[in-house]
Each structure stands twice: as C-alpha cells, then as structure tokens.
Image (cartoon, rainbow over all chains, first blue to last red; front, side):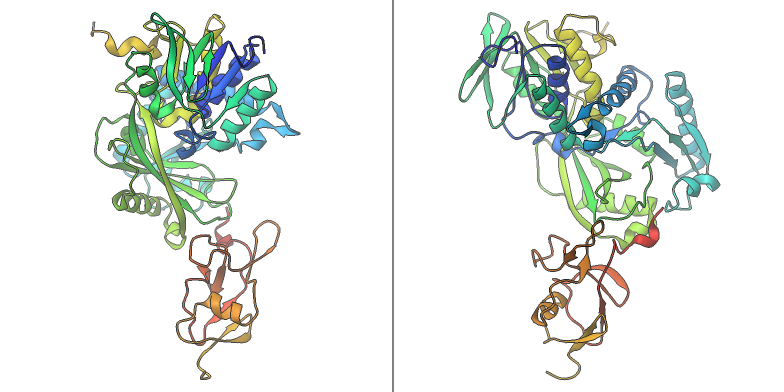
Length: 392
Length: 92
C-alpha cells in the first residue's frame, strides 16, 4: 500500500462482485485500496444472483460490447493462480454455453434474426433445428420449434467469485472492512475526499460507489442522483442431481422480458445445473420496491415454466428458493465511471440482472479510469450524469 | 402392535406405530443411516428432522428422494437405502 489504510488511493463501497472486481483491478494496478461494506462479502445484490455470464440475451449495443469485453477478462481472471488452483476452479467458472429455445416458428424467426444482428457484433451462435435439440439437451421438452446455441455463454458462482477476487485484491495489499456502513462522504466543496463510517473517517484519493441496488442512496450522500431502482427476482433451487442440464437453457422470450419496462410480474424460465448438483430455476422480474416477502405467484410461474422446458423436473423436489433485487436504470445500462458533478466519486453500479457477468469488464474499466489511463471501451454510454441531460 | 404395523428396510421388518414417520421408525429400530452421499458415499440419516435439510432422503417402493422425517410409515412399504441422487437415470 502506498497510502495505507489511513489514506488509501481508493475506497470501494460494496463488497459484492462489482466492488471486488474494481478493488482487484485497482490493487493490481498498484493503487492502495480499502473495500468497505455494511454487511458481509456478497451479502446484498451479488448473493442473490444466479451467476449468468451471458452474451446471448443482449441486443447489439453498448451493453453487448461490455459483455464481450467481460468474457475476455473473465477468461483471463479465471486463469489466475489462487491457493494452488486457478481462480476459475475456485469459483466454478464453466464455459458451458447457452441454448436459447423457441416455442413457436414465429419466435424461432425472431431468434434467428437477433442472432444475425449479434453475429455482426461478435457473438458466435449456431442454429439448431428442432429435431437436433435432444442431441444437445437430452432432457429437453420435445415440442419446441428449434433453438440457437451460444458457445460463449458462461456461468460462475457469484459469492465465491466476490470472495476470490477480494482474496486476490488483499494479496495485492487491499484491506476489506465488513460490517461497517458508510454513513457519509467526506467533502471538500463538490469534491468527494473519502468516506465516513460508523467507526472511522477514511480519507481517500477516490471513492467507488459499488453499492449494487442501494447505489442510489450512496450517490445521494454526494448530493448527486443515480436512478438505480430494485427489480425483484426469485430463483428456485432443486435437490442435487447428476448432470441433467448441460447448458444454460432458456426460452427466447427471456430476451424480451429483460428489455421490458413493465412493472408487473414477468417470468421466462432460465435453467442451469451447478457444480453442487442443484439446478437453478430463474427468473422472475417485478418492480415492487424493496419488498422481500415471498410471492406464491412468482414461485408457481417459475416452477410451471421450468417443467415446460424440462418435463422431468415435475418429479424433482425444490429444496429452497431465494430472492433479491436487480439494480436497474431506466435505460437498462449500467453506470460506470467518474461523476463530473462530484469529482473524486466513481460509480460502478446499475447492472440490472447482468452484474455478475459484467463485473470483470466493469472492474477493468474502473481500474483504468482511476489510473487516468485510456479505457478499453468508451465510458460515454455509461456516464452517470446522462439521466440529467435533455434529449437532443 | 399388530403384524400390519411393519414395513421393510432393505428387506428386514421394521415395526412402527400409527403416526410415526419412516425416519422415526428407523431410528426407533436403531437404524441411523439410510442414504449415502453422492460423491464420497458417507452415511446419512436424520439431521434436521423437520423437512428442511433434505439429508434423510430415502427410497420407498421405488420412489426416490423422499424425506424420511416427513413421510408417514405405511404397512407393507419397501423402504430401501438410497445411493446416488435418486435421479441418476437422467444423467446426460
């Protein structure tokens, strides 16, 4: 550490996967870093994630560019040595590919059209006719119209990933403070000069807001607006099974759900196996604020959807479920980069349901920006002040 | 107890009273393990006893992965030790 814990170069607020990726990138670049979180590691947005690293569900544009960069960075991070193994082995990183299926000929046509646009942007995909689907997924329903295979889609375990990246950051000199809530930002005029927690002041060269779904509240401490709001999601977890689902499998309608602005309950099944044997069944989307109560309707549609996709799941028990809040912005793009309204403050938040996948690129870009180096992708589409700009 | 109040566990008769769960009857008979873990083959039986942990899974009349702690004991049932996930025929 150059500045030490008492005046680090960077304080990262949030010990989720985004904060961990930012801390790792900054510490690897030689900056002194302190990560502070009011809860435990991965105890907020990340802990409720599914671990999707998808390119298949993104339309061409800034988010897809970010996802493609992130896939490259995840592969690099996955190869890093960590305690006798690779980071990828610790965090269950699997390049298993995604299989997007269509329930009707019309959906298959739209899916093929989307895949064409994505291909021009750098996404690999292969059309799979209906009669060849069982070769790829033997347990899949037989009434589908076809699908597209996306070999670039990957998966990892979100909580292990946040912990492993923080472990590497600590090996590079970073400090991680958990159970310590940031109650105020230290200011010098508009400038942000550090954070105040319940137990100490931490003056710092820069502050990174990686507070997930609660990032709007952290931004408000600097008197700036970042319109991150919660979009609730439920995930069901089955009993441990052998390998019964090879890819990340979902209905093409999922893409429309992700892009939707509806506040009501939406659900299109996303099903994948995990290293532990459990099968995860996502994903609902609802805008109901920070309401953590269980929704029988959401659970029912999830279970029904999953059984439609994989009929054998009707004979499998659900062990448990979990829910959390995706941090979404009105334009469905994350907020990444320095905030000109509050110099010294960087944001890395608002990734909606794609934050696990986009974390690696987000960390890289924030690290480059903190070091005042050229960023690998332009930060302009993700700039924090964009919501206040008048339409051209 | 009448002779009807028995089921078999891996072929051996197990006595029970009406209202007992399979897990209770096995435990009362001194049997503590009726499943092996998927990877290392370790013994498993009752853990939480209230249907939450899914540790006490057992096979009854060929139906796999039932929670012994919740399943009422039934006369004549064939309870067998469960190895693997109970869904290994779906492996792909």
